[in-house]
Image (cartoon, rainbow, N blue to C red; front, side):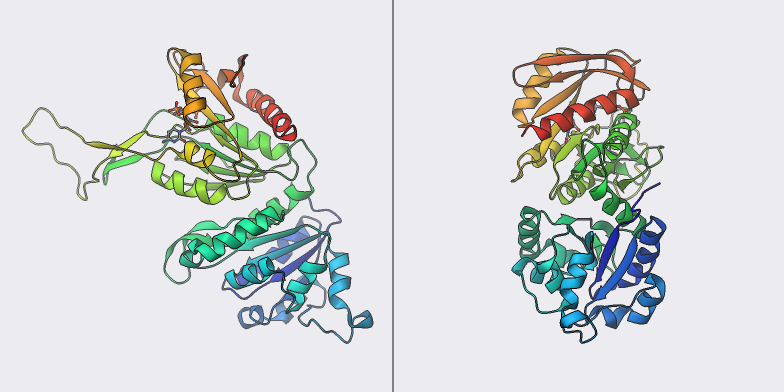
Length: 400
Ligand code: PMT
């Protein structure tokens, strides 16, 4: 169970429609053992009343920068010192801009300026505002300042748009907050992992895919969360349950996995591409079911998908980026060529000519391929292998 025992969380609420979820967040933070005090901006109070937040948190809600009831009128300093974590959920585009500028024009921004505690924000906004260059530049600056960015999730939005910008669910935010206090070799680190197959639609009932079960990627996500990392798992269709304390983003096609990976990789320390991504997709998706004709042959035209792990390795700053290589021959040669071509830091190569390891098996055996050396790890369960790999990756990151 996620623990925030004895932690003092200052929850900042800014003015977005997702503010209604902050009420539940208070309860979920308390369930995890935290004490919660709430600060609301004027705009937040248009969406949810301070009375609601007071009743749920059991503490007075703070709304004013100049508070005559606080000792020496310095409420923001007291609150800044009280917090073990300042968590702002939802964080609007406007709040993010003001935080980036270092403004202190309301209670919440003043607390952020004054506090020595870690600050985490859970962005929530329309997808267009999220994609806007101004917002993205602000986030880059906040990441450089070591401010933690939780989410956002993708999906349907209050305005009717679909895309990134939904606030994470309260339990996901509790997990992400807990990971900041976790001990372990990846404590305080953000890890993004792709897993499972992708499906490339041919028509409304058919698709191209492969035999990946997701077991390897899910085992890695579980091991990363156990090592204390804030862990995001971007998963193609699988039958597997979400590992504890892991945030899963469900995708279907390579294109969706590419977009979700780029969004999740912001501020990430380690990116692991364990998914078996379709290299090609049908050039056209038929809108109606393709009918059997008289011809004995049907020719499909395929177009190349974006290379997800290569796109991540091209980011600045670049996370420590790890690819998997599923090879049935010339294992080392092909793995090394992927290492160089995709600008990866390390490749985990599986020999898929043996059906007891690799795709859809419970075990795996791999070779860790780096620029100048290669190390074999013999056959063992994917869970055991994942724990060993995560310990190795943690050492590599610590040595950077
Ligand atoms: O899911 P399981 O049943 O547990 O099986 C695990 C696994 C065998 C799928 C896994 O261990 C594995 O090897 N994953 C990578 C399989 C693969 O497709 O390898 P590749 O050689 O095609 O791709 C090389 C690397 O580039 C991989 O990290 C892949 O995720 C990445 N890639 C590939 C194509 C693409 N368009 N984008 C990518 O990011």
